[in-house]
Every structure is written in structure tokens, then in C-alpha cells.
Image 1 (tube, rainbow, N blue to C red):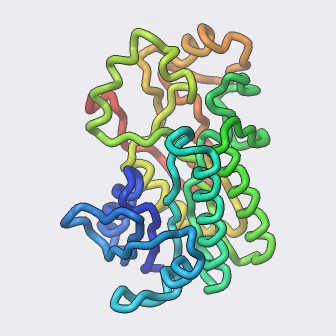
Image 2 (tube, rainbow, N blue to C red):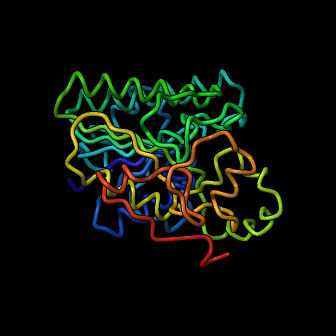
Length: 284
């Protein structure tokens, strides 16, 4: 597997994924509705993923840009609640993901990795989680239109995998994506844990997100699986147990020491071999 379609390639995570996969020897066909910066690696094609015909062309071949891809990494989406209207968010994200899944199925592509979201865990946690660290074991509980769309995408993935037992379709529930320059903001949050309460103080370095994508591409894991992808620590200097005691005193806490993440990544470690390599503490 060498030729990979990466959608949403001009976004924060997409840029990191394209750079990483190219550096690892992959032939990357990148696509977005926004052109990349000059000098960006990979081959780029403008496309609108809400148009099924364009998606099928991307998967099966575009003139002068190469033929059929071996795998798809689908990161394109309105990336958060509230950026556009609820209707626009849903009508962009869910049909685009269906088009990607369907094009891969028709073309016989057997590996799809796509960006689900930490939001399906119950963010912004106005309704307290059942326990912490949160993990993939309890049913999704979307609390926004954006999150509901991601939950719908996970359900679609489950059935696409049921229809084709050879398909590996992996949803990565990325935490809040950060680039190194974003870490300058982290010290300003330390006096008020409420500021980042909404996602249990989690984050994912874009470079570690890219590592997770590669791990998912290369794992032999048929069927549908979802994984939380977060860094190994929180965005806070305060111990995680103290944060939970102050702001979620009624939530059972399971074996958290120091500033360890409250977004459980044990499944990703166990099945994907994912291990975060970066922390804001080295760069802020």
C-alpha cells in the first residue's frame, strides 16, 4: 500500500499528515477546497467532497495525477461546532463522508481511516461522563450537530464494514489538534481549569495525530474500530486527579497519576501501537 488519498489536506491536521506520510515514503494525493501553501509535498487536486462524482474520480484516478489509490485518509470536514450553521455543518460533513466510504467500496479500496471526533464522548461534558479517563466502551453521546454527524459517520462505517468483511475502516476520535506554535497559549490557562473543562483538558499534537494515521493505515485490523487519539498528558500543570476532584467530583476516577490524560488512549496503544512523542511541556 503506497498510494494514499488524503482529504482535508490543507487543514491543521491534514498538513501534518501529508508531510508525515510523504516523509515515510507514501505517494500522497492530497485534496481540499483550499490550495496548499507553495512547496507543500504530495500531489494536490482541488475537489468538493459533497459531489460524489468528484470523490469517485479522486479514488479511481485523475488525469495527470495518477490512478486508483490504495487507501483513503479522510480528514475533510467543517472541523467544529458553531463555525457555520447547524444545517451547513451536517449537510457538508455527513454526505462527504458517505461519498468517501461509498467510493472506496465501489472501487475496491480496503483501507479507510477517517477523522471522527472526541466530541462523541459527550463534549462539552455539561452532562458528566460515566467515568474517567473516558474510553471507547460507553455508547456515543453527541451534544451538538457537529458531534451527531460524527456519530452518524461511525454508524455508517460500522455497516460498510459489515457489508464487506475485508474492509478495514478506522475512526480516529482526535482530540483538539495543536501545532507547536499553539503551545504559547497553554500557560495562560493554568489559573482557571474551567477554560478547558469542556474536553477534560485534552489535546493532540498534530505530529502525533499524523503518527496515529500512519499506524491505522498499517495495522492489520479488519472491520470497524474507533480509537481515541490524544496526547499522553493534559494541557494543565495541575494533577489530573485534582482537576477532576474540583470540577467533576462525582465522576469515578480510574488510576490516573500526575498530569496523565483523561482521554483514554490505552486501546490505541494496544491495537495500533500508538504512543505520543510530543508534549507541550517541552515547547511552551
